Image 1 (cartoon, rainbow, N blue to C red):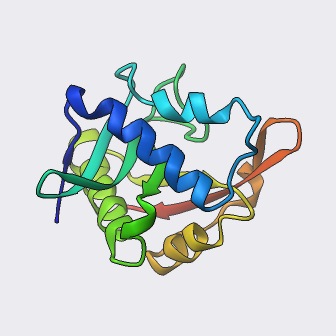
Image 2 (image 1 turned 30 degrees about the horizontal axis):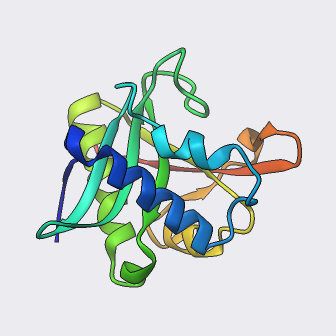
Length: 163
């Protein structure tokens, strides 16, 4: 398995993988507008869409969102970068794909973007994601919990990045 930047020709597959993974984890309602937003997140060039691939098969994806005043939801300044839309294909879960993606995003945030802290938000019912984040050294950041739409409260997490 390698983690690399997604190519433009893979964006449709990345979007479908995100939706399949979130649906498998019951992270949105069937009548929600979120699947369409999730499908295209990061395709506007405001972040780096990374994929974990084995041969031609994409196993998972994550969006690394460097701080930007108009694009950042959780990061406060240029010392922080965000992880968004972490998704692992249902058939690849439990194989270390999520951890590999998060590690790659952290390395890139520190080395290429100069970030000193990684932040992310997740749904309260995303227990597998929360276990992963905690196992990788992330801690809760409750003062940054937020709600993008009524009825959906997101939990914030953070981790300092190596210099």
